[in-house]
Length: 470
Image (cartoon, rainbow, N blue to C red; front, side, top):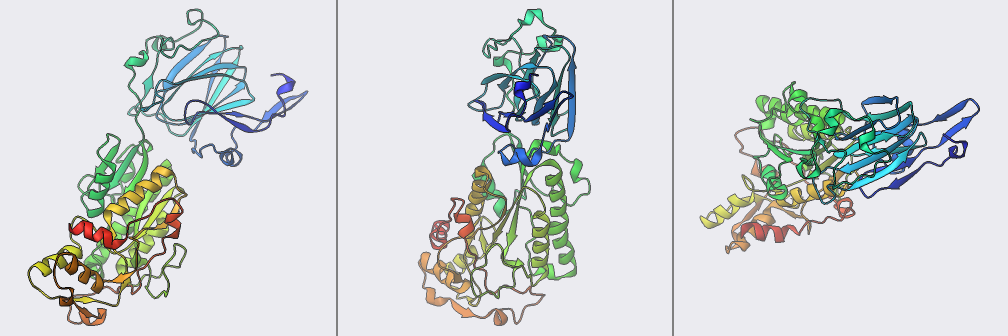
């Protein structure tokens, strides 16, 4: 490498292939030789490179000029550089999508590196003897991983190799790889939705659809409390886990059996998922609850207000929140008063109205209804837009209200006299309960400002209620 290349500033150059970026590396040298920081996490992520979490460092040494290798697209990211010598590199996008088949070529010497995202085919030809080609990868080789390969001489890619392919060293395997028309594109990383049969799980299925890379799991499919969960999947193939599974029987949680089951589902299972997400660079989406608060705030709760759960259910949800918060890539969705396709407050009220029954309904708890369709849409928005990781309040918007007024609204929308609904205090409502009763937060109203800054807003709960009942 010539002296004129010393002292180059660290900078990033985009390429026509999304996610494939070339990086100029500062090289410091004198009469003794040279030194460079080949991968410097803090500096490079500050420039926008992914914090891709390498787990293995490989070196390919090439004796002769013209040694040619590739085109291989593996299901992991690579950081490629040259330790000694010089290469002509060629990269072909073999991922599903509009840029499938796109090609980028350049020369690399020790003063340059390139980040190669998962699914982009990687190949090179040595231009100097004794060339050492190095690459960091963020997964270990696996016989069950999905790979794609492209023939080095593919006419559609039309790579202009500096040295003709009939004059260089190529392996027989590389000579026999398919042309572009025969390549199986690498699909996106998988998305796992747990609790797929629950109210939120069903709304997530409606929102996300049934694409091949989206997996829906029930308790029968995947036991989240199992100590063997870490080996139940090839987790490096997953990008996101949306945990819609939870124990939500707030009153039963106050019983000995319920307490055990609540901690298993809301803490033990979440701990396993958090460990898997951390170890494999997965984004973990976790759904939280208003029950993590004691409800005594005189203003809407923000994401930074201290938690203070009152009952067992709230304690388990609060513990789960704290665990998920340790995952580098996480979204905690804090919601309340959830209504979806299943057992909820609204359907029984509509049934009572239709059957001529006049109910008494709690009038001293304040909040907003939240429909699972809105939670599912909000989760998709945060994940798809890459919103900053952290905790987000997500409920219906509009004026906060009480369960009593919601019941009256249900009667009104369904064509019945709302005066038939009578108010009652929480204490009086549960005065004759036959079993344990979990304490309820009095105020379950959330501030939605942080969510709105990401570009997502929910409908007024009254509009959603009318649509739901229609």
